[in-house]
Length: 345
Image (cartoon, rainbow, N blue to C red; front, top):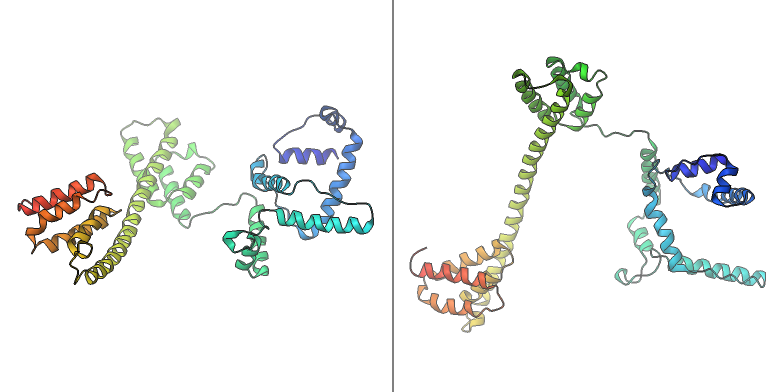
C-alpha cells in the first residue's frame, strides 16, 4: 500500500516522507480506511482494464491530465446528485437505469445541440469516423509513440550538419569543450547545414582576430549558428507570404472583374443615378474594404472619365454625399479626380 501511495504522489509531482502510518497520521485518516480504499481501487481497476487503455502522464507534470480531470468536474456539475430508489429490487434497477441515462444525456458531448440539427457531439464524431478498426489502430499508434522513451524527431540533414560541426570543431580546436559530442549532436538536430556553415565562417574570422576566449568560445558559436538560422528562416518566411499574396491578389482581381462585368450589364441602359456606371464605380471605390478593391474601382472610374472629363465635377458632388463612407476615403478620391480634371495627374 505504501508503494501505491508513493506512485500516486509521484504522478502529482509530490515526494512524501515517512512510512504509511506517519502519512495517514499527517493526513488525519484512519489506516483501515486506506486499505478499504485500496480494495475499492483494485475493483475499479479490474472492471475498467479490459476495455480501457491507460496512458501514463509525464512525471512531475500533472497538467497533462488537466483537461480530462476538468471534464469530470463539468460532468458532476451537469448531472448533480444521483437518486436511487432502494425500496425494492425492481425500483432499484429502474432508478439506476434512469440515472445512467440521465447522466449520459447531461454530458456536454452527449446532449443534443441545435447547431448539429439535434445530434450530439458524439453522434457527429461517430458519423465522421465510420471505421472503428482504423480508429483503434491510430490510437494504438499514438499510445506506442507516447510511451516510447526519449522520442526524437531527427531531420534528414542531421548527418551533413554533424559532419560540418565535426570539421569545424577540429579546425578551430573546440573538441576539448565538447568531449562527448553532445553539443554537436544537439546543434545538428536543431539547425540546418546552411546555418551551421555560416556560423562556422563567422566564428573562424573572429577567432583569427584573437577576440575569442577559449572557455566561452563554444557558446559564442551556438549564438552565431542560431542567428544565421533565424535569418535563413526569415527569408523563407518572406518568400512564402509573397507567393500566397500573389495567389490571393489574382483571385480577388478575377472576382472583381466578374463584378464589373455584371455592373456594366446592369447599367447599360440606366438613366438614373442608381444605374449610372460612374456613380456606382465611385461608390465602390470609397466603400472597398481592401486597398486592392479601392484601387481596382478607381482605375475603372478613371477609364470611364477618360472620355467624360466634363462629369468630374458632378461626380465629386456625388462622392461628397456618400456620408456613410470614411471622410478620408472620400477626400482622397475627390483630390485625385480634381488633379485629373486639371491634368495634374
